[in-house]
Image 1 (cartoon, rainbow, N blue to C red):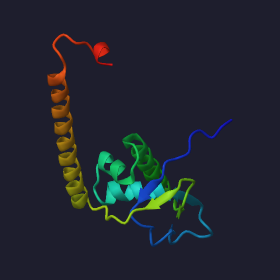
Image 2 (cartoon, rainbow, N blue to C red):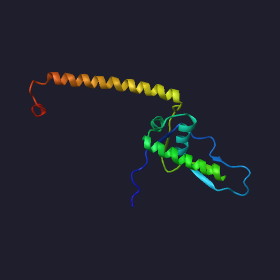
Image 3 (spheres, rainbow, N blue to C red):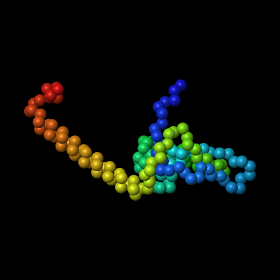
Image 4 (tube, rainbow, N blue to C red):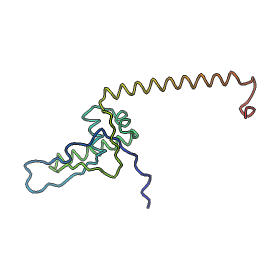
Length: 148
């Protein structure tokens, strides 16, 4: 059976400086929980930096439902590790990772979003005026069939 379509590139702010967290005071070698780099980034954006799911999804360049799944999975794994004294290891995972040079702070993200929305409104106004100009040039009573 096929693997399905390949995963999209998941953008992260930067690689974490620490890739493993170990509990203290548990005898022997504790079990491990693996956290993929994209789960780590989603958890960091939503819970540490205060991004909404929609904002986090835009920052990582993926859909909001995909971002929500990453956050849910990461929370479940971290909770399991904390509750059961397991090691948390962060690994690259099976997705390609593209590191963006942009800082993912919420305030800078909101500024970028406002600029994008303003640009989108400008483009929509231009498209509406072009459409109105085409309608004004169309002879009265003409159908789209007559024009082509």
